[in-house]
Image (cartoon, rainbow, N blue to C red; front, top):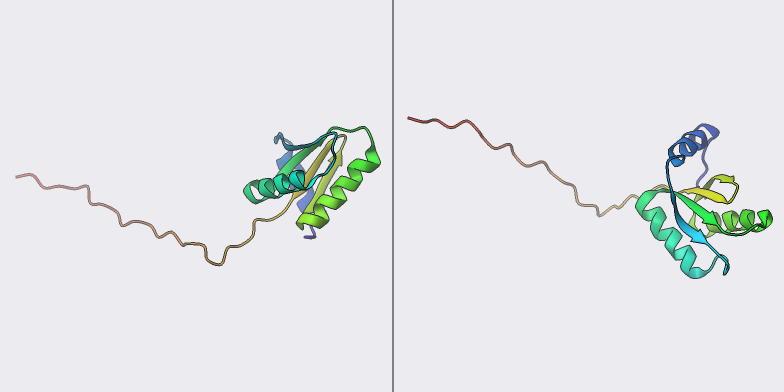
Length: 111
């Protein structure tokens, strides 16, 4: 699990304020399919909100712990029925470097 400082946590909470939940945990709980969807969302966005449809606070805390341990993510905040989770994007060693195209000449000479 990545460790984040209190300053980083504060900044991530501020960034997450405007986000909408992208994954929901409903009556069947935290299934493998839900974990896979959370993993896909973390790969795409790094910082996500998860809505839990359940009234049991201990279960929501358990979900947060399980998600963070299973997906190597950091818990940012658990407020009400929302869980905020962050995981940095993996650095791809084989990522293709994009080189800028040479500038085109726009000046033409007319005779």
